[in-house]
Amino acid sequence: MATYLRRKLAGLMKKDETPPSLTVTRAEGAISFSKKELQRYTLLFTMLDHDSDDAVGGAEGAFFLRRSGLTNEQLREVWRLASGGSSKPKLAKDDWLVACKLVAG
Image (tube, rainbow, N blue to C red; front, side):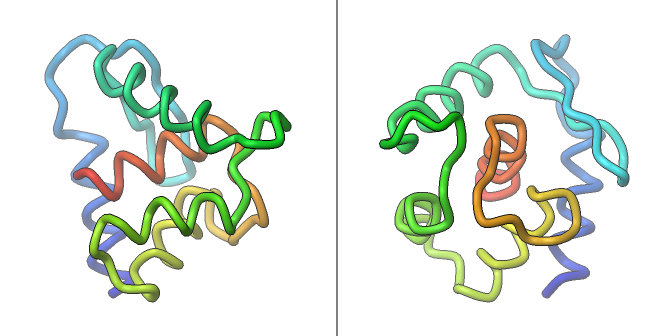
């Protein structure tokens, strides 16, 4: 499963041909976000950051991401990859954007 998500992450780094509005750099490479993706994922981030600490906590994020239909194992791997390789208790905005793109991609 982890290998599948790593390949998916690698594919996302090459996929979008439109000029990026934002690029997030990870050890695996750069991930670009279109203006539309950036707007959508930022809105979700704002909605889920209930305590206004500029981060989405594990409980908040998991509750939302479970709606994607991915298994808990897949979601743990998404969270780990979005965290930069080792799971964090909360995802900052850039990390959240990566998580959303992995789930959507």
